[in-house]
Length: 115
Image 1 (tube, rainbow, N blue to C red):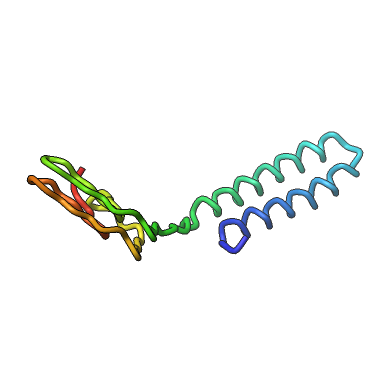
Image 2 (image 1 turned 180 degrees about the vertical axis):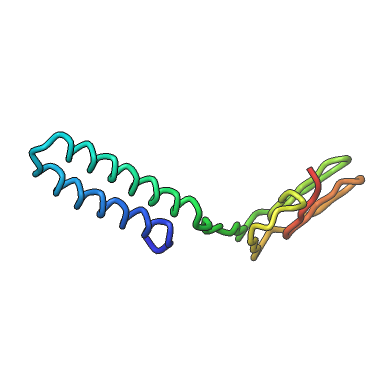
């Protein structure tokens, strides 16, 4: 649970649980309704904070891939093939040989191309 988003959800859940424990000891229905509304409000704020925090984007890694061959109008990639505007962190290592013949295209690494 290293991300801030998870910590916000954990704290919100603990706060709601603590307040619910206090609410269940009250005798009055009016107090219960008020407390339930307050709990819903706190939960809403917690979820809103969680949604507002940026998500952690994990990267993509290709490692130790096999050889690829492309012929004719074929395409082969022994690494990573991503859309042109993709900003995901990418890493390749020890990718296999990429060979092309008869007008084919072969890549061993990272390529970002239009889709």
